[in-house]
Amino acid sequence: FNPSGFDLVINKGFKNGIVGGDIVISPNGFLIGKISTVGNDISHVTTIIDPNSKITVKTVSNNISGLIRGAWAEGAYMDFVSQGDSINKGDLVMTNGNDTFPAGLVVGKVNSVKLNSGSLFKEVIIKPFFREIKIDHVFII
Image (cartoon, rainbow, N blue to C red; front, side):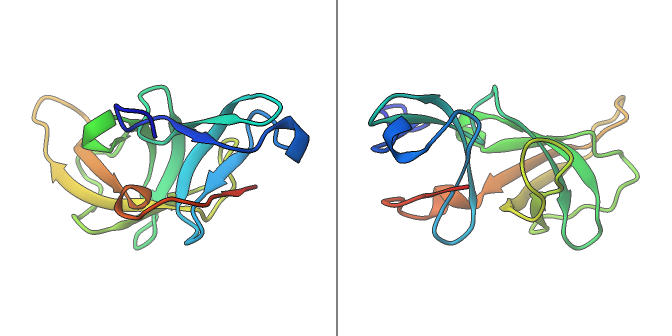
């Protein structure tokens, strides 16, 4: 990670078969992000907490779909969760496969849910699991 703690650099690149858009996961299977730039011996990863990162997801317990967008220190927001959807703190969140990320990758858990009067949607904050572990190795898929 760089000093701000959000960009990930790995010591593999084109020479190792890595290309832009490859998915990066932890050894535990937690989603970390996607390869954004690749050199011969180095690659940069846009993590799921980067504000430019957007991923379609769903909750495991009740199949509520939404869009994760990175929020740096907060983790990530899960957008488009309607006020009537039953989503709770602690619900497990995974990719749903409706974008370039394969279905079934564990993203994290719901950290907080707030009703937002005057809006159609709740404010849902996700705590990504990859931030809770020491990352010294990753898998590229």
